[in-house]
Length: 255
Image 1 (cartoon, rainbow, N blue to C red):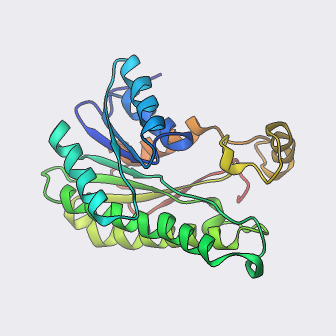
Image 2: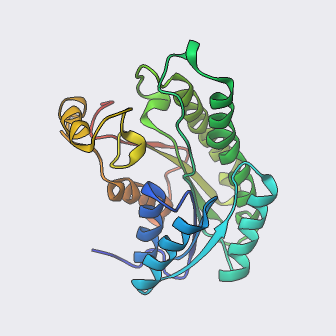
């Protein structure tokens, strides 16, 4: 059942062309938000916009690179120019590279994950808060980390886990920095979700499903819609007293 929790508000979602980002964008639109979708590839973003508009929503696609400060400032400006405010931002853009031990990890892979997963969140968050704190009603930001960040470890993902732990730490510190500005900042840490990123090298979806029967107490992989529901809760007025929290959505894998 949908509601109108975000009617008249504007939500910005990075990495919104596929997976969790697209699900989050669609969920905000279903609850009345004007949605700005951002990413590096215009094709998938346009598909997300088409899905929103087909359902009667309003959306704007902006091609932007989270590792470029100027792009993040321009993204916020585009959202405000089109819809008049920026009330919610979800920093979802991220990348996983590696799958091998630290000793075999290339410096290029490390720097790419650091640039996108950490610096990208910082640059986006900075631009978003700078605008939100000028608004009478402030705003809410939800960053996307991972249960591998501070909650769980698996072999072959040390560098990725380090970047996601940094996102969690950045979120909690920034939440304290800016709650007095009327900006609430929280983080969602998904576990394996029904996207390509959760598949191990050479693994099929059926094999992942079998693996998750033992790895997650809930007995299955999480859906992108379940992660989106957690994001919308933290962004909503229902979570008005929730500040600097790390909400894990992983079917009990880290319970």
